[in-house]
Length: 335
Ligand code: HEM
Image (cartoon, rainbow, N blue to C red; front, top):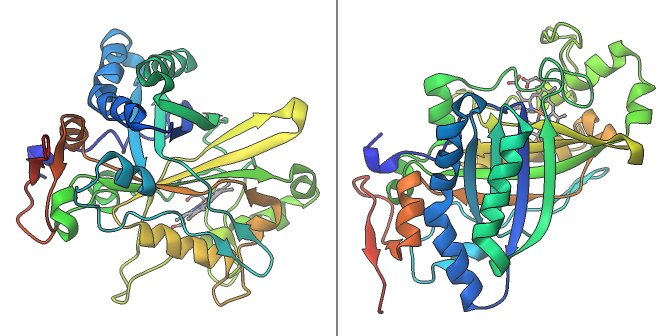
């Protein structure tokens, strides 16, 4: 990967704590200018904390929604796959599409620095943005989801993770970028806890205590894992990079999973979601959805680190993506 395509810290693991923040851009040109200015500062704010508290491994990823791209950078080229999240309507379960202009994905090994970084970010953004959603996720024991199963095991690692997450030659202008889809799920814990462990294992497709995949023939075709193993026409398995964490407010009976997945092609994540909500084949939907309901759904583009700074400078990506892999930025200032 060329230096210009250095990604944002997308492949950072889940962190022990993560803040998932979705913002809307306030009306008016001044708000747009405020957001553009922030994009240039974002990584510096994270660096400042990392320099002082490196062992807490703080990171910030910034994503930009489809409508926001148009508003912030009129006249610029668009990432080829940037579009609003597509709602899904299965026979039993639905996935709504909800608004969002800017995503902040803050991860760290401790909550104090997540709080500190988000405070600095919000100060920088000022009244250029309006809050839409803010969720504080936490690592639960040995990386368990609120449902009690280990989450993240089959995530790709190393070079495979890079290959799954980052845009390459297929859209060279945006190389080093990524697409991220988020969904906030709420769980019906009473119904879930009423199932025996064996029944729960059939819903997920892995064992609960040891986190081992159920063997073929035992793993139901409507289990979560079975429906999320997908391949292209050559039989190559297609991967996404998930960074889910649970969140909860037990006094209100709220137990959830914040689903967040990075992919070089959001069509892969969308195919997995069609399998879950519509079913493979149709009607054979993901049984985990009988206990888990998404209340948000939004898609963002995550520019590479240098593109984030270039965008703030008014240097906008130009032209088609089918060329030689350089950044292709040109200034539209004064035009
Ligand atoms: C309530 C939300 C969700 C929960 C609690 C959840 C939980 C889990 C768990 C426990 C596993 C097994 C361990 C692992 O390999 O990570 C898993 C696997 C997986 N999930 Fe989810 N998940 C959720 C939503 C989603 C969604 C929306 C997608 C796709 C769009 C997805 C894609 C996958 C994939 C690709 C795997 C790995 C399958 C494999 O290769 O074995 N998950 N999930």
